[in-house]
Amino acid sequence: GFQRTGRSRAADHPETFLQTTPDRATAHRETGFFGAAALRQGGRQESHRSKQRIPFAVGDLWLLVTKWSGTKSWFMGGRLMGKTHAFHIRRMMEDDLPAADHLRNMAGWNQLPGDWLRLLRYEPDGCFVAVVGNDVCGTVTTTTYDAASPDSPRVAWIGMMLVHPDYRRRGIATALMQQAIEYLQQRSVHCIMLDATPAGEFVYAQLGFRRTGAFRRFRKPSDDGKNHRTPDVPLPSEFQAAQPSNLSRAGELKTFSGRFATADFRHQFMDVRAFGAKRHLWLQRLAADSCVVEADGGFGMLRGGQEADYLGPIVALDELQAAEVIDALLSQTGRSVFWDVPPGNQSAESLALHRGFEPIRELTRMCLGERNPPAEMSLQFALADPGTG
Image 1 (cartoon, rainbow, N blue to C red):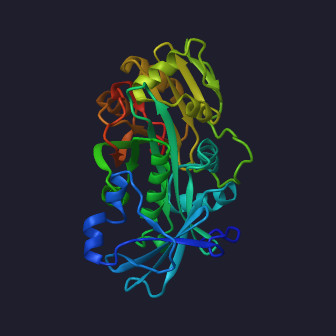
Image 2: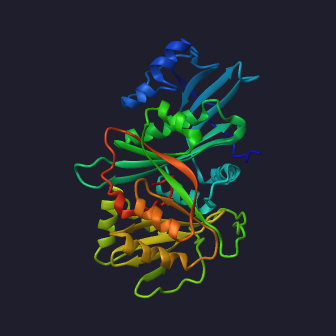
Image 3: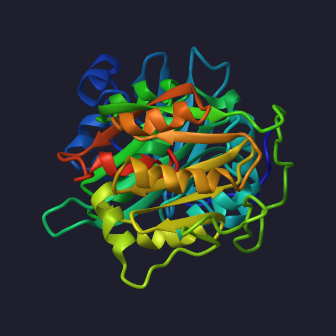
């Protein structure tokens, strides 16, 4: 069930071992699951140039942590595993994307191969994989946005947190999260957000994330009631539009394929108010794979997905403006559609229900940092993606 990558350099150049506590009860009490106390303080555990191997205990597991140039490695063993395994964390490369998308497909998530490429090219130093031998067994991505104002925190989202089923509950998810958090803290990101599935919420809480709200994913069946699943396709060499067909103008609304721009930048300013950070560069990349509708009082996008088309983001000044944009976008597709309604926006939920959408799952929004982004959720009518906000 794995996709194989090239030989890792991690086994060739050991340099230092990270000091951890050998006492299991003390380790769990002082650091949570894996260094959570240090992460909340924005610090790093002390490194020693020593080859003494000191185990870090987590329940019935012990972890031996080593650090190499460009990689970090963990040796796992204990009563829960019949033998010792080793994994290391390194930067994600484009050669890893077929293996990463294999994990995504196993989890049943809706992204397409091009979504991985967009994430990696936007934040090439902030996407990571966990590797056992030569096999990619876990992934995580980060997406960083500039602060909305000098008084606002810089914001980032953690997403695409995936671990192969055969390697879960072995510290891999926590190690990937630790690497992502460390990367963002080094970039002076003081507000780290994520949208958690029920399976991941406990791990994130142990790392210091706090719950800030919940939201629901809605689904509208296809026009003919059938499941029009996008066939598995090879990773594109460049961004290729996986978008609904038959694009057309809808009244006075402007409907585009593959671009997002306005001469007076009013939508950019509106989005900063709604989202609480500057994400215009990210929206431009997202628009390359989307159907884009712009109106005087709002804008929105619709793009393809594995199981269904995805509606979002939608930003509008009020419910009426949002309804115009949403209806124009929905007219472009006959497939099933997913819609992630932002936390606390009851008007958006009402719009979804009145258009035949039904709730299918709930996710939890979580934050690591002293302050939440200054977002006006009443202006957000659909998320861009749970992995990027």
